[in-house]
Length: 611
Image 1: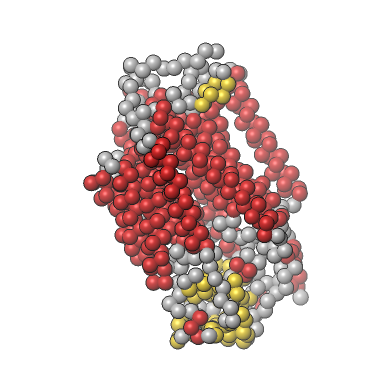
Image 2: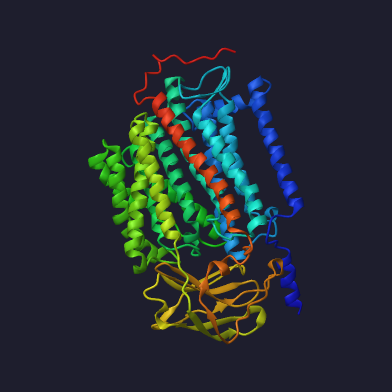
C-alpha cells in the first residue's frame, strides 16, 4: 500500500500536459531579463557608452580569431562554445527522458539549463555580430539595418537561427498542452530546437566568409593557411555534428520510427557536411571534419554516459564516408556538383556497408537484412541530396555558386527528395488479427523489484519474417533495458536476461518487420496524471499486437481533432522552411556579392559609413 501511494505521488508530480504556471512565469521572466540585458549591451556599444564589447572583439581578433575582424571573431567563438554546451544538454536531456520519463517540470530538469544557455548563446552570438560593426560597412554582402548601420548577413542569419531554436521552448509547452507529452525526439517542436542549433553552422560559415574577406588588419595578425584550414574544418565538423543530432533516438537504441531512417540520416549528414568540408577546406578536409566530430560528439557521449552517469549513446563512425569523398575528389574536385553526386552514391553504397558493419558492433539495434535493399536506396537518396547541397554550400561560400537557373532547381529537388524519403520511412502498418502469448518466469518475485524471463509465442507463427528487430524494451524506470529475443522456432522467441516489471518501468515487446512497426505491452505502471491504470504482468497472458506508438507515447491525447494537429504542424513547417530558405538566400547573397577572387587587401579600400 505504501509503495502504491509513493508511486502515485511521484506520477502526480510529473504533469502530462504543459508546465505549471509558476514555472512558465519564472522561465518567461528569466528570458525577458536576459534578452533585455543583451539588448542593453548592444545599445551601449552602439551609443559609445560601453567599451567592453569593443575590447572583447579586439581580444578575439588577436587570439583564436586571427584573420577575422572582431565582429566575426567574437561571435564565432561564442557560437561554437554555445553549440557544444547545447549539444551536451540535448544528449543529457534525451538520456533523462529515456531513463526517467517526463519531467516534473521544465525547471526541474537539470539538462534543460545547458540547452537554454547554449541556444541563448547562439542567439547572443548573432546579436553581437549585428551590433559590433560600427562606423563601417562589414563587407559588400552586409544587410542594411538603418541609414548608417550595416550588419553582416551571417550575423543576421545566426541570430535568426538562435531565435528559431529558442522559439521551440514556448511552442513545446503549447504543444504539450494541446496534444499531451510526445516523448520522442522527432516531435515537431523538438525538431525546432535541434534544427535551429544544427543549421546555425551554415550561418557561422557565412559569417566566417564575410569576416575573412573584410579583414584589413596587419599581415602579422592575418590567419595562417593552417589556421584557416583548422577553422573551416571545425565549422564543417560542427555542421556534421548538428545534422547528426537528428539520429539521437537510434544512438540510444529506442527509435520510434523505422530503421531505414537511420541510414538515410547518416548519409544525408555525411553528404552535406563532408562534401562541403572537402571543397571548402581543401585536401583532407572531410577526414579533418570527421576527426573534429568524433572529438566533440564522442566526448559528449563520454561525458553523459561516463562522468554524469546517464545512458551511453553510440556514435556513427563516418570515417568511411569521409574516405569516399576524398577519393571522389581526386578526380572531381574541379567539378563540384559532379563531386557531390558521386560522393553521395559512394556514401549510400560503400558508406552504407561500413556503417552496417559498425552498427553490428556499436548499436543497441544493429542493422539487419530486413533493411538491406530499402536502406541502401534511402542512403543513396540522402547521400546524393546532401552531397549536392554540400557542394553548393561550399561553392557559394567561395563565390562560385552556379547561376540561379541551376542552383535553385537542385536545392529544391534535394529538399523534395529528402522529404519524400522521410515520408516513405513514415509509412508504417500495424497488423490486424495478430496476438502474442507471453509466459513469464519470475527471477525476483518481490513486487518492488520484480524481474522475469519470458517466452513469447506470436499468432500466427509467421507474424515476424526476418524482422529488423524483435526486442524486449523497458524504459523510463530509471534505466533502459533493450534485449534482442532469441528465436526458438517460427513465431516463438525467448529472453536471455530478466526484464524489469516494477515501479515506473514501461516494458513491452517491440516488433519491426518491413513496414510493420508494432508492440505488445507487458507491464505499464499506474499513471494518475493521464488517467491510465496499471497494466499488470500476470504469469501468462495473451494480448493483441498493436501500434507501439500508443504504448511508447502513452501520454498523448487521443481526442484531439486531426485538423488541429495538421494546423499546428503546418506552423512549425512554415517556420522551418523560412529558416532553410533564409540560409539559402544568405549563401546566394555572399556568392553574388563576394566573388571568388578577392581583391588584395592593400588595393581594396575599407568601406566607411558616415555617422
